[in-house]
Length: 253
Image (cartoon, rainbow, N blue to C red; front, side, top):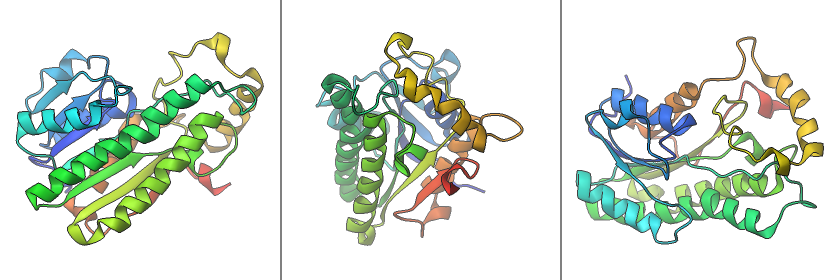
């Protein structure tokens, strides 16, 4: 049985996809969830006992520190940080990516997890109770193939951040791991401006996705949430610095 009861957990990107599924699962397991998103989560989540919502714009450099402060003000502590929120780049290749897109993706996907983790580590140390950080990278963090240039670079970077963090704080009972989802049905492309999508790159996406999709179709975000729950729990106490693919063997090719 995964033990998450009363674990105060910061979840970024709580209003949709993997972040929403994770928030719901952690609440079910008895955790106290401080959900972060610029968009409000569904009403059925906000009504849950043990859930608090914080509206933050992750492009604001002050947000990471304020998020940790707000969580402590609400729940008194922080035990787990789940860096799930992510930004996409319309699959643009290096020849088509613009600087604004590059900076936006790098800020949300790398800078925010780094700074949020930094302030969480400070809190873990004050509490003298250790803590767990789990970052969401991607299949794109394990290869350089069909995803957009900025997105791919950011997801590689988060793996480096994860390993460095795990090693540096290994003797303080502070763990840091990452998962690499691939082929999940998160609705993440529904908000794309289709006029800006790199059509040449997108043309190669379908055939590659078909290589790993199971007979049941694309994976539910709940499967990623279950992995995040395990890695956050005391049952994973010896797992530190791990990069865990969850992609139906896509990363094997």
